[in-house]
Length: 115
Ligand SMILES: [Zn+2]
Image (cartoon, rainbow, N blue to C red; front, side, top):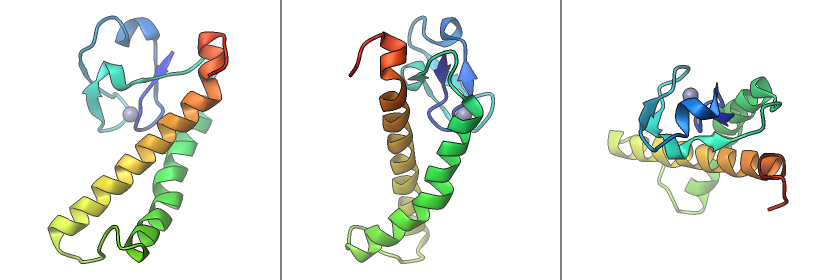
């Protein structure tokens, strides 16, 4: 199966991997190219993956935001443009970490060989 890169919601391979096209997740607000979906084995614990994504976004995300400000990589200005930038950066971080973790966890099971 493949899963949503934003929430871990599962989809049948056949429905989303035959040709690249734009899709919208039926479970969350994410939309994008079907090539962004993440491959996972049929037996993947989808509820745990969704919990992992929430953990990365809601628990780890704010800590990363604080660290990015401390490092001077972001500012903590409450100007709307800056707040939007912080949200964009943290969302990208959560997505990247989620994709990396899921890929590392399941690559061997999906492809039948180690990374
Ligand atoms: Zn989704």
